[in-house]
Image (cartoon, rainbow, N blue to C red; front, side):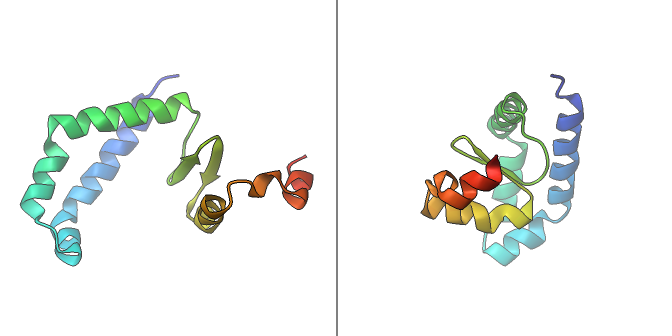
Length: 102
């Protein structure tokens, strides 16, 4: 699977983040210069590449997509379900969940 389009999307996301980095850091009480240095660091870029490759390999797409174990949670509206799954990893193996999954 080609990752060029996905990499372009990540680059766009990073550019948008960088535009607002100082404001976000101020809101979080973080040092914007240190954060900018981390964003530009080779280690960060390598980690982003590795994470992107792993996401493509797992068949993930969309923002956000969470993978918790073998389960995938697509979109911001799935975050409450992801939290519930973290509290009860067996929830998808229960009666009603199994019924709707088939």
